[in-house]
Image (cartoon, rainbow, N blue to C red; front, top):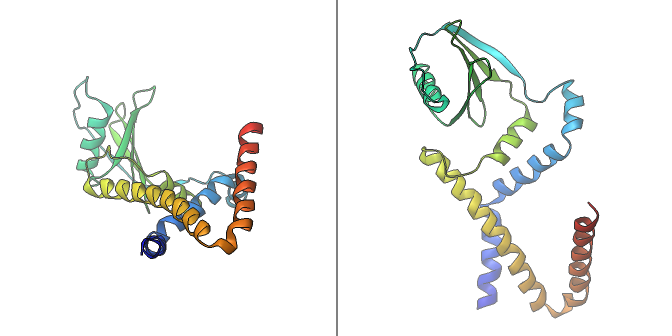
Length: 197
């Protein structure tokens, strides 16, 4: 009975998490071959194009933090959501409005009282990397926490697949000899990489 539960859980969990596993596999491939994609695109993978430019005089207080400025700018542009904000050396505020498909970079230049809104050109490698790196429970939006939880579930599932795979291998006595060789070879190769890289 226990073996049947292990096998069914192994299988159904794999079926449920197929999109996540595919995304992590393909995004790791994109990161591992970044130079190939740079050559393919003839330059940087991440490319922004101007969406609009508009005057902007928000009257920020002198001690306001970039995150607060970013939230206000996005609210004024009706682009609320997950974002990062930073202040450049010249006082310019750069806000990146995260989005899986169409991230935007908003640049506020206080000296010129204007906002530049740029949209990232969709390219598969940068989309995959963005999804791969999306993580954490630090954002206030529920959907971000739901995504972070799905990442945790994927991690737990991978550990379960390893353990349940070992259980199923040991349970099938006909596979023990070849299975032992595979485990030993995998551990040896991993150890070699740890030692030499």
